[in-house]
Image (cartoon, rainbow, N blue to C red; front, side):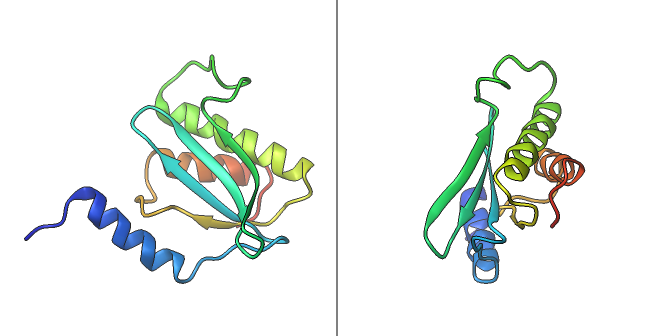
Length: 118
């Protein structure tokens, strides 16, 4: 029997999370993509806390114009600015089971341009 999209993504996510883990010095950059919005968080897995989070629903990005991929790039840039202000310059990228393509790739590229290393 064929897997649904959600089951396939969940299997990929489990495979990635076996390997990828965040620390205080190098947190995990987690991406969640819904149909309309995109969310990104920096997570310290050792202490189990979120260092910071940015989404397309944030006040400064709420009225952003453009396509979903352009908004994802703005979220990545905003995340990089906040991370550098918080003293985080290196992260581990967790694509959360999504293909590294489209909005996920735009967010990652914009975060790299903003100064994050991963």
